[in-house]
Image (cartoon, rainbow, N blue to C red; front, side):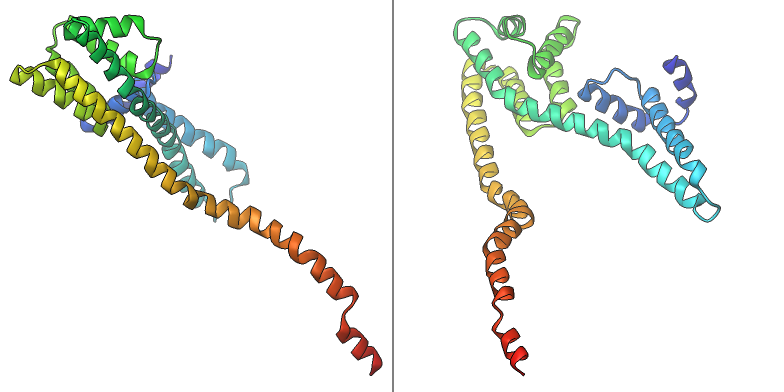
Length: 245
């Protein structure tokens, strides 16, 4: 039903816009076509207008429509970008382990394709393993290994994944050992992950500063200064001086 209604959006969802939305939906693992995603935005705009309409006056009519359009349009975009960010974060964490497994299989004597198949079949489901499975399926239906790996890197646009793809493509072009390339890549990826951890650790004190200033320091100030202020109010020497006068 939704797909039938979404057909009306075909004229406005074409070209670069459609490709961009299709790519984002694929990365976020949302089972929609771009026309359905546009329809979702239109429905959200309609819902905002329906909810706000009873309390709208002629003076606030334009503001309400602008509010409904902005939030109805941006809400699904924000939700989709959030899912993409989360999946990319998981990919970055899982990539070094996947490269390690591929390297172990290749070191054990398997060629790259058999190693890829073994890793996909034997590993528990995860974001990275699912993507490697897509690469394997694309190669099985006729794509070259270079194209499938390059498409994986283009889908996610992650520096680590681009390095992984570039290294394998380079090894394939130059005829160098995939085993050596995977071993070097695995070491580099783990070093990069360690450095990212160090950077996050350095940022932690700055992130903790605002909660400390807003929530902790005022409470500590009240606990420390409260008794002093109460004692000052009860035993105010200026009060006695005033009374004496």
